[in-house]
Image 1 (cartoon, one colour):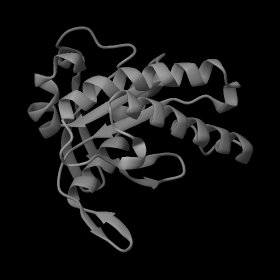
Image 2: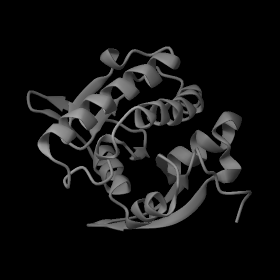
Image 3: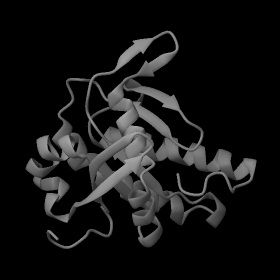
Image 4: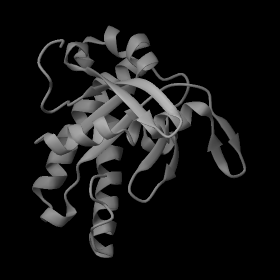
Length: 181
């Protein structure tokens, strides 16, 4: 979530509760209950792993517009200090589970994508509530063949975070870029 740390504890609680409400409703619209997904709370965000059998294209096509709608509804009824704007990273890959949680190079990449300066800059420059970045391989394998994800409105960006150098693909679902660059 954008600017989470600069809020008071009661506002952080309200924003966090609002995020979970938004996510539950958006996921339900895809036919997937958020409670059926592996989740780890990160304070200012949530790590969510979808079931492996999930149709990734159908999920992306359904969840992104619903997230925008639910974020707008939340923000319309919330004080300014409790409004939410989100950065989301999308990636697919293997994950190892143990008694302490999950780990993998795929998760590391997803977190690096979410921390990428071009993604933060895109949200800061957008009047919208949501910015999404997909890994290069997820874009190639899933997004560009999913008409409902409007692949022509995604933009490639260089991602250099810690030891990661990658191409990511950014989308602004509620204020899309027009056509291919």
